[in-house]
Image 1: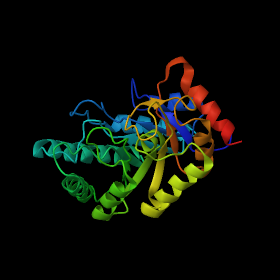
Image 2: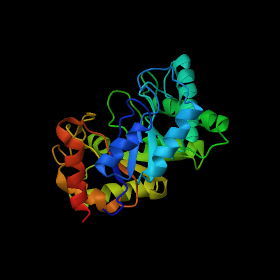
Image 3: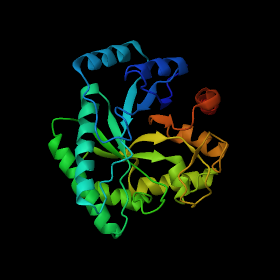
Amino acid sequence: MKNMLLGVHCSVGGGLQNAFDEADLLGIDVFQIFTRNQRQWNSKIISEEEKKIFSAAWKKSKVKTVFSHCSYLLNLASDDPELRKKSTVALKDEVERCHELGLAWCVLHPGAAKGQNENTALGNVIRGLMQVLKETAHSQVKILLENTAGQGTSIGHSFEQLKYIINGVGSPRIGVCFDTCHAFAAGYDMRTKSAFEKTVTEFDAIIGMKNLFAVHLNDSRGKLGSSIDRHEHIGKGELGMEAFRLAMSYFAAVPKVIETNKEDDMDQKNLRLLRSFAV
């Protein structure tokens, strides 16, 4: 099978290296993982032995790119100084973990503003990112801002907000991970060729395709502009088949992962469908 830079979020249950077993079974060349428990602040240190085992598993695999998703607890935008501090420390830890494992980047949700105005929240994110980059200057690991669905007070749902953060930080180590479900829920249509091209053109004009390093391919349970962050299997949601047919073409050179439920061999089914679009 030709390289498609296509994969899924793999499980690390029983050890980080086990993600490669899942990847090999699925025949994928890209995957995303959690390097730590995503719902706890404390993280277990990666031992030298674990690093060696992970590296050995990667060398045996056909996987080209591996990246992580940061903990859902992080909120660099928060109005709570203590939470911002904990989030910054945890993000630094994630970057370090990626560096030690040889991962290309980590994906980050920018956070939620809560009672603050947008500019204050965005400023918090910028300062947090700048601190983490300064404290990990020895690393080339990138932090990719994931566009959000716009639920609640979350920021990062518009291309303009993401660009504001990128410009504010001013570092080549900041990029973007584009989530199709989130974009659609935030009001960016992709259901037809003309709508898809309009969204991609807008992304390129505001953020720049050079800043796009990863894509999350997820259909959406919520309707266009609903701000509902609920992933659905490929072609089973409101986005529909055509959006993903186009995505496989327009994002052919970008690492792409699916983040949907794994029941009933759905990873295999979703991958099979997406691969058929690339033929």
